[in-house]
Length: 548
Image 1: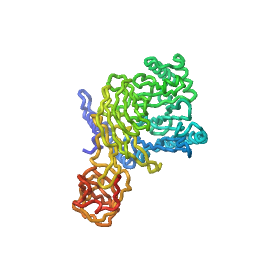
Image 2: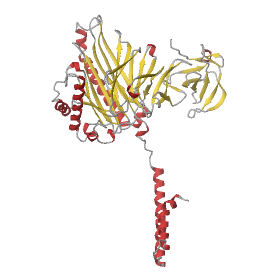
Image 3: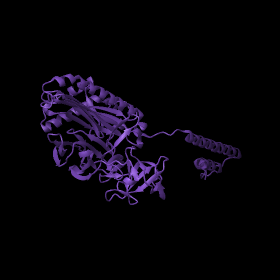
Image 4: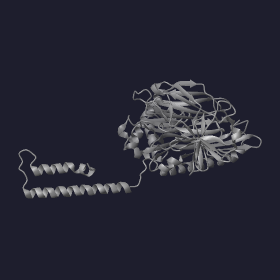
């Protein structure tokens, strides 16, 4: 039956019933009434057909609208370094700050957010360079700086408190040391509407910011009492917090389950208390929050800063636990131990490396995991995975992998791709079948909390690996979209220039010709040298580059 008539069927049946006196006890229509009803039915059917045709035309002409829910923003962080040396005393000052951007694909889906992050990076760079340069002369002239003393230090690192299709929260961890007894450090934050790129205010998430700040002060006061942390003025805390808010000095972050307020040392407590964080959770005080931004996220991810706590309900009792990590380091700043803290209970692990990026992830399977990307010798990375579900910490898996490096064409920026989306994140490994190269593939958090790859192959990150064929060999041609084998036993001619594209990291690589043909080449990697068709790969390709 035609869909137009399906739609008009109830109306037609109703008119027929009226025409025939179909309801018991009712008088049948007269001839004049019957004809009028028939005309009405015909006009109704014609209107329905015209409306359907108009809808079809609108469907065909309507532009395609990209859904922001298709993918969460994928973030790239790169770090800028600089250092100042005295000709006799050595290092006297160092600079280190992050820049943040969206991947090219995310920038296309979230153009306003990409622009906002560009502005944040520009402002950060300008401020950090200004701080660094303002102490240049002092660092060079001071008798206390250098190898026998200290180096001045200026640092600003970014972490992500929340990243989804609705909101993005960037935490800015600033540290400066220009001499004296200790460094000065604090956490700032900028919260963005993911769709518009506009900065969010407390009034955007709460119908009553003053009441929200009162609740945050109450929670922090209780937290300090329970841990015997001294505050300057416990009774006047809420007034102090309100003053900071009104003066624009209050730093807060929108989290997956609530908000966090950050208080620098000396602002409300002595330096020994450290930086303090007040939290209010959506489910704890639903009347203090409003809108779609303030609903607990079913799946979420965030990056962590050392010794700064995050929150998650690990044991399902409705009360979030505090989670943080810290490291042990030797005199050379090498990581010699790794600690995870859950509500003050310490879980130590023997890990070795130079730098750590840590991520807290909660997936659709209900697992809460901590992923730690640890950089080691020769830029090798290992991914240490810990299961925090249930309130205990278990070391679940170690992978020879790490965060991927992505390149943003628009910003001309390469950097580390953060793992903040449990449903889609990149993990990178080092390949060595036909050269030494980095490659990655997309994964998602499985039900057991471990990464599940979306493909059985890796994509080479850099397109710069090109080889010239010295000796003909046989390969299979492959459909680049479906990965189906199109033809086997194809001879690749001498002189062809091929670009390394993909690999399964063990038995084959895929190389692209200048005409776009994709060749899958079987490689025997069981011994050295690698061979193709029984021949040494160095006799087949020119341009091979192996590390070490």
